[in-house]
Image (cartoon, rainbow, N blue to C red):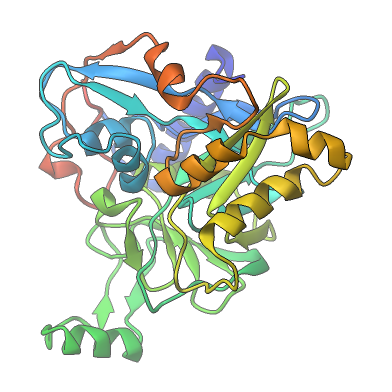
Length: 358
């Protein structure tokens, strides 16, 4: 189940009130695009739907990705062979807005590093349907791995300043930037953006960014970067003390209406594994089926499809149950929607909220 008009209206009103409270100019700012879904029932673990849009030739794939709250790697991997900067007039673009949820427990924040995506499971009020919200992230660059495991949100900061650690100063010096600042004052040019949420891991924050077109890439020194509009949506509804679980699952497996699905993401070499990528993919499937009898395990999975998807590294969930439609068949059956929005423009590359594409 996806967005409802009522839930979108409520979130928009709350979001707008927050922007006014913290002093943002709401005139023509973009509505938050974060996906919010009712948690699936029974043993289903997939939310959202893959869609296909047809652009009229003005947008980059990054414009389309940001509108649907996707990261660079997601839109690029779902549209291999299509020019990122000039997709072409009337080109069909796959929009991977279907997500296999992380393993339970579904509580607080769960970040899957290879997927470069954050899932927030807000605690429902009495009588309220449980929801999940999901946001794309930038993750650490090679050599600066984020710790895995469990922690909590220990503080939140509006308009953070950044004192650049000595290790990062040294990195920039070695890269030919001897004048790299040692301090960034609060403001839209601060690499931490306008809003920051501190985890219990030393120096690890979930925060906005002054380079939003890098969301979905490997750009940080261990922190997680959000689009400014996503940081502004998450910040006011995330309580201090919220549990945070950071996982390393490049192969995600889920169920929907009796079928098994899998999506695959590039493994992170900073988290070394003792088994091959294909063995990791098989292990992810077996883990999901661990509550099934052995006979069901053998007959429920098309292992050739598992191999293909693991190698293709597609973010679009694909059927791995025997006899189900292939990913190409699923995408071919989707009716393309016209994408009628204007590009974001260069003024959207900063720490402030962008203007809404019209």
